[in-house]
Amino acid sequence: MQFPSQILSRSESETENIAKDFFPFVDEGMVIVLIGELGAGKTFFTKKLLSCFNINTANSPTFAIVNEYNGLKKFYHFDFYRINKPQELIDIGIEDYFSDSEAICIIEWGNLFSELLPQERIEIEIKFKSENERLFEFRKL
Image 1 (cartoon, one colour):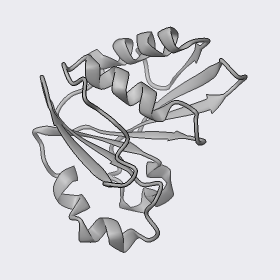
Image 2: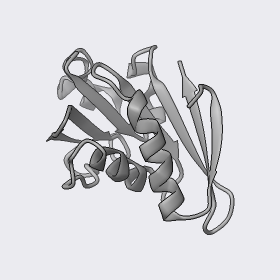
Image 3: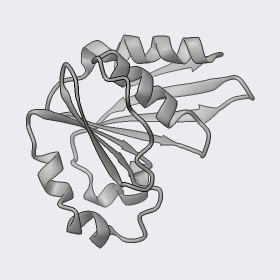
Image 4: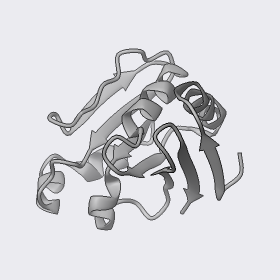
């Protein structure tokens, strides 16, 4: 996979393959930001990516804000959708999560508070093309 790149998915199985193709590029200390409308497939993509790391219990952290998973690597899975202001993330110690060099942070809706994100990150934007098609845009910042 190259950065930047665009990949069209026409089905859930193709989205799973995109996650598998991205898997070798994921390493400790990385921050991955998923951007897209409601229902675009951010959580589905995350679940498929985490399954590559032997984590099969992932679910959306919408109400918990962050879930921690341990498999082949340690992950913090965030959802910023219900966050109202940056201070809420500061209060939970967002910087401590980002500075954990042994973990990978995956953030759904990270674009809502981009000012708090590390400058170095990977952004994956998922765009609706049709009912069954999604365009995945990968960027390395």
